[in-house]
Length: 133
Image 1 (cartoon, rainbow, N blue to C red):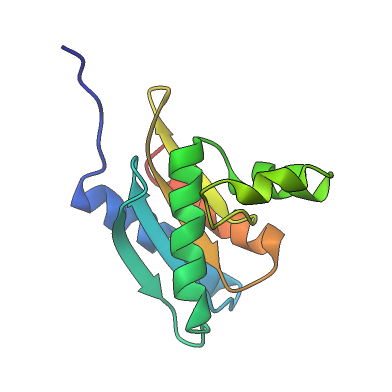
Image 2: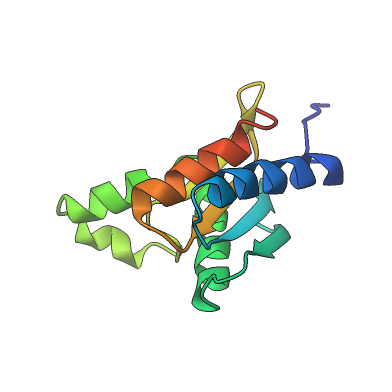
């Protein structure tokens, strides 16, 4: 039987806190979503000033990163590069800002950020991931 690492609640809080610290240090009002490896929401933190819409977008970015096992920026670049058929994939968060959390070579979850420019969303997500990966 195989075993796998999972995100504990303490890990999720560490990810949220590290991502928020990055966002706060730049005065970026964002929403931070953390999912498990199956894309199921474990936590959501909407910072002051973040648009209500960003809660759904951040969640979908995290879900897509977890299920796709790669950064959502890859999907966005694929679509922008002309592979528009990928828009029919059963994923909704195909924009930059979703980053998988990889432990020992396996995806254990993902972080999704929404609320600022795409590269800033990615910066915040990677700061969150770096708290445990």
